[in-house]
Amino acid sequence: MSAWKSVNWQWENATAGAVAGLATVAFSHPLDVVRTRFQVSDGRTSNLPAYKNTSQALWTIARTEGLRGLYAGFYPAVLGSTISWSLYFFFYSKAKQRYLKGKQELTPVLHLASAAEAGALVCFCTNPLWLVKTRLQLQTPLHQTRPYSGLYDAVKTILREEGWTALYRGLVPGLFLVTHGAIQFTAYEELRKAVIDFRSEESEEEFSGVELLNTIDYAMLGASSKLAAILVTYPFQVIRSRLQQRPSKAGIPIYMDSWHAIKETARFEGLRGFYKGITANLLKNVPAASITFVVYENVLNMLKLARRND
View (cartoon, rainbow, N blue to C red):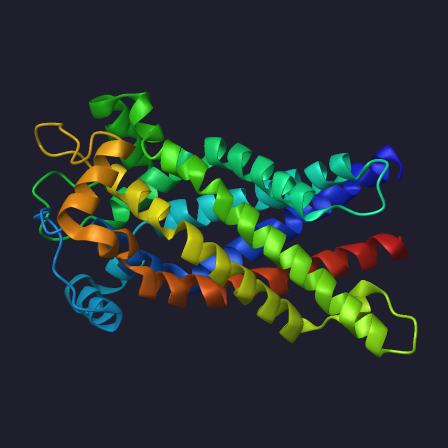
């Protein structure tokens, strides 16, 4: 593959990833708000209402805060998701190409390494956006401190009151969450390969991998790989959300660091505390993963077709 084709391929992946990320967050944001509020609800935070379950939380937020409450933090979520998916697919495809040199195909370990590398790079780039998103989602009518008016005001206030390092609170569990993407993409690649191999053996005709898969296949593969990743890595999401909460009026964080958050959660809530909000998370992310991979694969196929026709 020539250098020009290599760069073209990487940017096609980045474009497909950006479009997929935008479609995903627009569909699922209200559930993301509910998930975040459940995650930080440890029984000791006074500025959050008590919700019984996901449906009651959605209804309560809609009734008391309106559409604005259901889409709190939407702008940093859109920006963060679009940038994250774009960079993720770009770095992921670039890593795969590098590891593929001199090999017929990548092993599961190299798929894992590619996904982990991409996830770590994205984490460093986007942590400030996820912190702002979390804080905007946690603003309720019960807040005593002056609420952030939006993305720009949040960043400006955080820099003024807490310093630039506050924008990287939750980075450590965020880096551990790299395993989420690694597990998801490894599962997706291996399941995709298994389906293609199975259908190739069943069919007597010659087909490419693309021709053997359809939209339903991409949706099922995306959902299955996402479910596996969520079950393994969800506790890291809870710890990150708790670390990213806005400090008290005195400027003291509710949790000082990752280890403090883990100890306090285990002490007061047990294992259940590490899986708070997982119902909303599953409802949000399993269908969203299906949408993401359906959009990604179809946009990527369209870009490949357009390039071949040039």
